[in-house]
Image 1: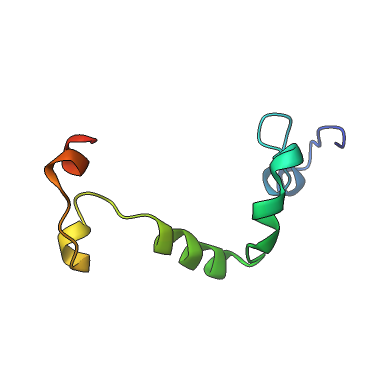
Image 2: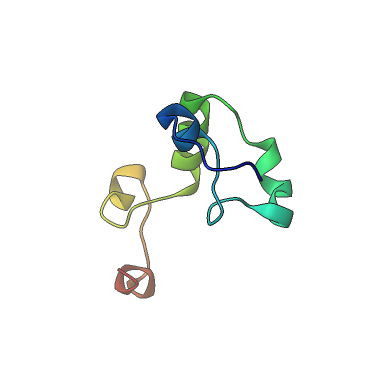
Length: 67
């Protein structure tokens, strides 16, 4: 891992000690590099409890209670 950078662009675009995936990088390597495509992937994986019905989903009482 590289030394910390004082350049803001480098600081915010490279993982640090806490955020570097280390040996768990495997599943992340298939993710898109461009932000719009990455947002599309993330938005396809998460569903906010208050938006579920708008996507045609009915959450169980147990799922709703997780909030």
